[in-house]
Structures are given as structure tokens and as C-alpha cells.
Image 1 (cartoon, rainbow, N blue to C red):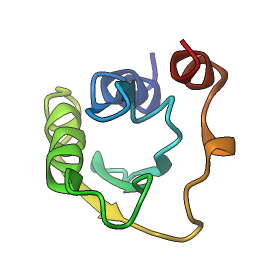
Image 2: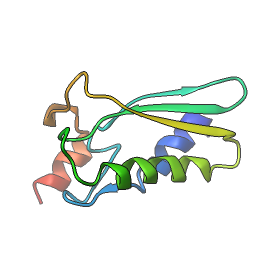
Image 3: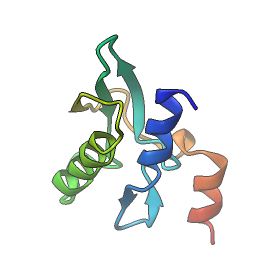
Length: 99
């Protein structure tokens, strides 16, 4: 499994506590950059700019990726453009939302 796939799999363990859907299926992860030195930068968003749980979610993202053996450093950038919308969700995320 390549490192990006390992990162995506790890990120599926981080849930938005209000929606009970992981950040990958919710469509919050916009970009994963991996340097030659295995430094990882993740650009992500939240469902709303005023989300009171933003520290919890972004910390969870950072910590789960830091736990991957090959990863050296992790930086999480919270971005607001493009704005999140439900069309960014995976099919799995949509199914989870419509339970």
C-alpha cells in the first residue's frame, strides 16, 4: 500500500463528532502532499467556518497521520476555499448521512 493510501485509511478513523462521519467520506480532506523526506501536508476544511470542534478534528487528523511509521512530520492547513458542500462527500458518506 502506498503512503497516500495509508494516510487516507488512517484519516478514516477521524470523525466529525456532530455528524458521525469520517473526514474522508465527509469530503473534508482536499489535498495530501508528501515530500521526498516523508513530510506530509494536509489541506482540509470543515463543514462550517464557525465549527466549535475545529481544534479537535484537526488535532485528530494530525495525530492519526503522525502515527504512521513512514511519516516524519505532519502539517494540517485549514482552508475555506473552495467552501465545503455535501457534493464533496463520498457515496459512503452520503449513505451514512441518510441512515
